[in-house]
Every structure is written in structure tokens, then in C-alpha cells.
Amino acid sequence: AQTVTQSQPEMSVQEAETVTLSCTYDTSENNYYLFWYKQPPSRQMILVIRQEAYKQQNATENRFSVNFQKAAKSFSLKISDSQLGDTAMYFCAFIMVHNFNKFYFGSGTKLNVKP
Amino acid sequence: EPEVTQTPSHQVTQMGQEVILRCVPISNHLYFYWYRQILGQKVEFLVSFYNNEISEKSEIFDDQFSVERPDGSNFTLKIRSTKLEDSAMYFCASSAQGQGSWVGNEQFFGPGTRLTVL
Image 1 (cartoon, rainbow over the protein chains, first blue to last red):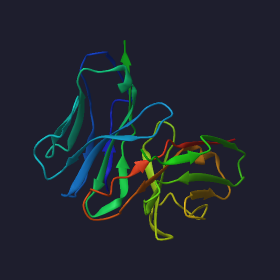
Image 2: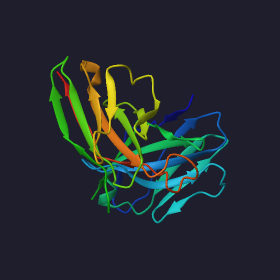
Image 3: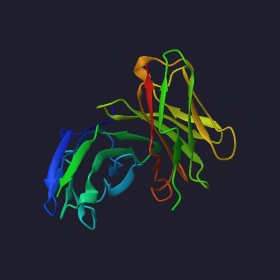
Image 4: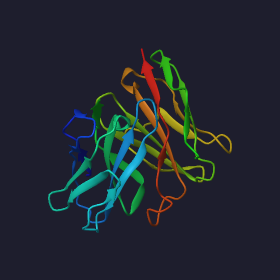
């Protein structure tokens, strides 16, 4: 079975500071993708960053980067220079290459960026 | 930019009533999905739908649930006789493809419908 765990229900960070959101997952699969999605209040989930499991290099998208530790099954998200617009619920998710039908999500981390 | 839309944003219903949650996927997408999130818990996969058929469903998706694409634009989730435990946020998603490489398979999510069963 595939599971995704986000152990931080809520976090706060000061504007312009750096914050790291944790995610661990469990799977026996070898080929999969990992994602972080952002859901602003009352808005849809949007993709923040994606990591292919076969790539050792950590993905980076502007101020967002991941620390992907495949052996430890850990996939944390680092947000640098936090902005007020980063305030949102962040979901870690996992999908298997052989079945794109089905995402496995964590329970989310609510991030509050304070001015 | 095209978006997945969902209506209503919040639905309140009495236990035992039928509800229909509506979604308008992105227009050229062929694969459709429903997920739900009970408050404080994980977002859970319910069902995927392609070519007017269910592709995959979870154990949550029992006989109380059904999905339909009644016309060329809407994708609906019906709960026949709602229970208190059906109270959750329901997310619709769509993707252009359902297999192959990730390019074209990205799922785009709607903003969700909050269902409250009293």
C-alpha cells in the first residue's frame, strides 16, 4: 500500500524567511513521481513542484526546492524568501508511473506567512 | 488559463437525501477524477472516469456513489442517500491523458465543494 505522511498540521514563518515542510511516504514501487501542491484559501490546488523518483537531482522552481531522499522515503519542500502569497495549505502527493489514475495525498500542512 | 470549476462551493443537506456535485473539467481533457477530504484527514482518491466508464474506484466508492458525464462539459458525482460521514470536501480533477509520460497527464484540480450532512 502507498501512504503519504505530513507530520506538521500547521506552520508559521515570517515574511522573507525560509521554511521547510516535511513529507514522508511509503511504497514498494520504484517508478513514481512526487509532488507538492498548494491550495490557497477557497482556491484550487495548483502544482508547485514535481520530482521524478529516478532523478537524483533535487527539483527546483524559483523559490521552491525539494530535498528528495529516496532511500529514506523523504520529500521535503523548502520555500525561500517567503511571501504573503505563499499562505496556503500544502499537500504532498505521490503517483505511480504505471497508474496515473490515482494520487496518494498527505493530510496537508497549513502554512501561515506573517508580515 | 483554463480551470476546473465546481458547483456549488458549499452544499448542506439532510442525512438520507441525495446530492449531486457538479464539475466542469478543462474542455479538451479526457480523464476525470473525484477525490474527497474529510476535515483534518488525507485527500483520498474516489474514482477515475474515461470514455464514459469508471477506470478505477477505491473501496470508499460504494453503491451509494455514482459518476456521470451527462453532456460534453459536466462531470457529476451523485451520493444517493447521504450519511453523516459523507461530510467532506470533494475535489474534481481532470487530465488530458491517463497514461504514458507525465507530460499531458498532469491532473488539474477544481476548488472543491464542501458537503455538510446534518
